[in-house]
Length: 330
Image 1 (cartoon, one colour):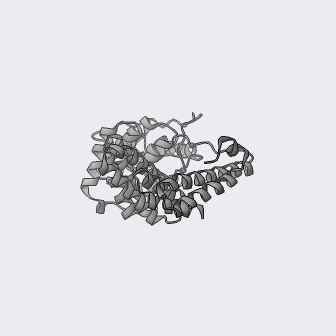
Image 2 (tube, rainbow, N blue to C red; image 1 turned 90 degrees about the horizontal axis):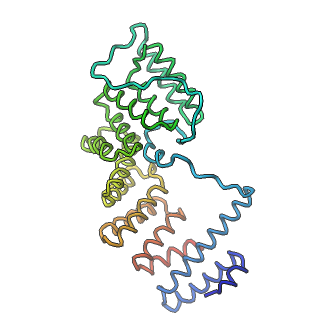
Image 3 (cartoon, rainbow, N blue to C red; image 1 turned 30 degrees about the horizontal axis):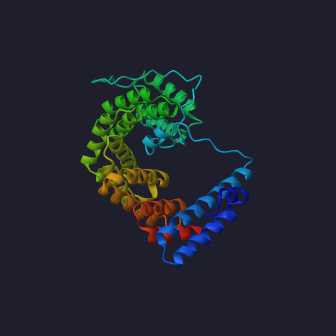
């Protein structure tokens, strides 16, 4: 193996070539178990070199991690037009009073045309993003004034989404709960309330709502809502200490809606499963199967190939791991 001095004096690409040559030599001698770590190291060096070049091309700038990513994960599919969430403080927010659930809400002002009101709410919803959240909030305030504070369920739901974008998950939950009171049969709102409980770390409450929608049947909701349910329910089950169920949900999600499953999210779930699987063979098997199925959907995605190779190596399947590492080095 190259010495530490040699490693620091040679470019990553040259060192990767040396590791690859060593791995190939061991592979040809039938020492697959010894070859795999060298293949893996060659891949790691090439990836590090590529990242270094990208940073140089960008002038050394590295994009910061998206703030609020945990909430974004929990609520993807719920925030219809939101680009991302942020937990930065926001100034000059229009004052729309939180609406508390009421068993018998007052009717909307008779002077307000309901079709026109719904159209205006839909228009605001289409505009919602992190950059426009304050403008959407101002628009909702104007509509709330017109209806004397009696927004319909769609308006309250949009208020909840906007509050979540503005980093106010507790206020968001109140708005979604108020919307659900006005439309208690809406499975979409039940998903939203469950997702919002999850964002507020209320895992048990989140599971109650999300499992209720699951029991009602996936055929009762459209693909977008189904994807949101898979995302939030798998996350809630994982946080509740049921990693096997979370893995199974990810596999079902991937089977039914392969294009809607974020690669990074599936990889994170699988890698967590592999770690937990060191003491549980069933979880380990499920995690590896998720990686195999993810690769079938994304056969050329390098991070998926590498994750599968790492997973196979961790369980002692050196032959298949070596083949995958070699594929990455081509």
